[in-house]
Length: 111
Length: 118
Image (cartoon, rainbow over all chains, first blue to last red; front, side):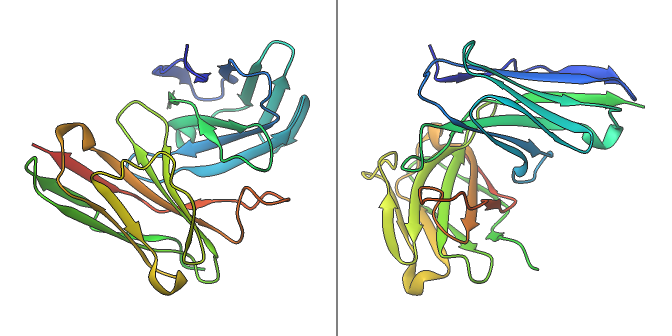
């Protein structure tokens, strides 16, 4: 079993839809969680950074962490064609570790 | 503010040849990372520098990969000799401080170098 798993997609939704992107992980020691967005032929860019369980909101984006289920989610409200990209989750145990990335989910928002 | 610069953007070589990639981090960023991203996978850390010293190179295949960061600014990553399985995008990232330090420092990624080994 891989440490961090994501459905690779592609996930296609109409413009304006609410998108739910998810990651599952195997190691309950992970405490710090990030979501990155990666456009085609570009490097990843940070969207959200959260610690432990709970929700965090930033504009149209909401990150949720459920440590009991070892499951994290990224919700995108009012999705736009410009949101079409690959979304990577990443996580680590503590300050002494670098982040482990998931394989990414490819999202396509259709106008 | 200028971002992380990488060159070349694309490289095609035959197996057993050598190749080198260059990275110029954001000015003032002490920490520099090289990642390998194979198609359909997330980035995998190869090596992390703090200034010109190596912090973590546990996943670097040292029999064929080498990296240096002279003077604590620019960095080069070399593969010699290349194998088919080295085909990937090589991403460079930088941050003000180490993400392994007591507070998170955001990593900024460059556009990557896409390597194809034939």
